[in-house]
Image (cartoon, rainbow, N blue to C red; front, side, top):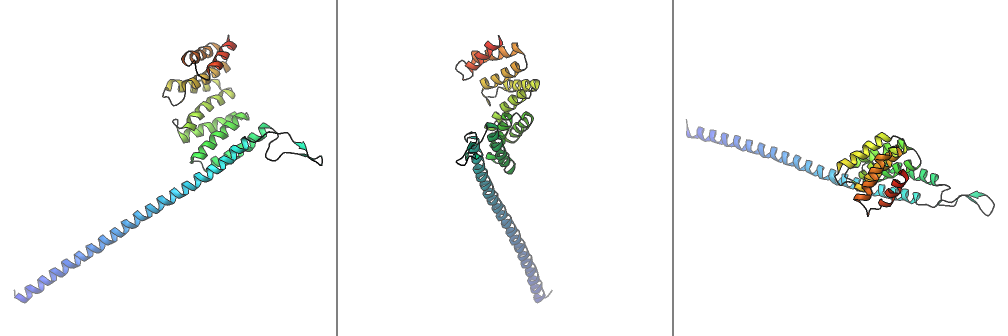
Length: 243
């Protein structure tokens, strides 16, 4: 093979190698650009979600504050004004139930509009409390269970909702269910809920169900194990009433 031919072949090999290297570099650039774009999009999405979540939480907090202001409003019977017309004082409600109904509507609005926010979970709990006060036990039990499902049993509202659920079941005269749930909480012994509070709920459920011996035994535990508890006096009163 002539020297000139060998030189031409070498040049062709070098050109091919350079072309391959350029192609690989271009591909790497495209990959890098795509990767950088994806990272940027993820960051933008993350920032966008954080901003949305922050706005949602802030709005929910404002709404639940308004709802809490409603349930703290004065109850005042309508009175005649200067012209003799019967009117309701601004910012007040004619009855406790009317005030509870107004607060309930607001709490449910927050809970349904922002279900995953902290304020939304709190609003669902307060809605359940309002429903229980209004005597709407099945609805209250449903809302309490929703709080437990959304917040978990370790969360403050989740823990309180478990006690509320027991109380609501007693209110609905579903004594066996109430006793079973309260007993489960007592047996859990995980410090998620104050033991004296759980025992009191269990004792009340037993008493409401007419199981006086079990109720008395449970209230005795409250007095014996928690003599300084805020529930101790109530437990003693219950023991006396069951004697």
